[in-house]
Image (cartoon, rainbow, N blue to C red):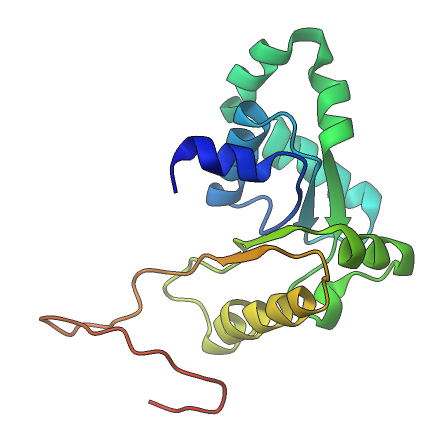
Length: 184
């Protein structure tokens, strides 16, 4: 897909982004806002107990970063109003059912309006405790998929995953799909 067709696709779309404070998510959010200002809404799922805490994380860990300087310069004095119109924080956690979204009206809004889900939430620690990595990287992805299946307007779900999962094997590594219940 060429970049112009991607930009056209994203126009007037509501996008749920998980892992909103992570490295890739920040880049994704900035790029979408800068190159497709006609995106309908970016919903950023942030681990936080409430909306106030999630908003603080958004300002401190995402919007306030140097990465957003070009967008700030492009938008000038309209930057803050543009962000408040286009970006909505969603307090939650993918390790929980319904992505840990406790507010029923917000959950209904997402289920009804989401066109695209980009799951960027994961632990990137290669020495993470096994149970923590399993809950976040595996069960978390499953919770995102379960949520996606309930979104009638969903056009696409993008799952971003760790590239370094092959261990220390040498040679060609064939990709074989595994399904729930399959074992290695």
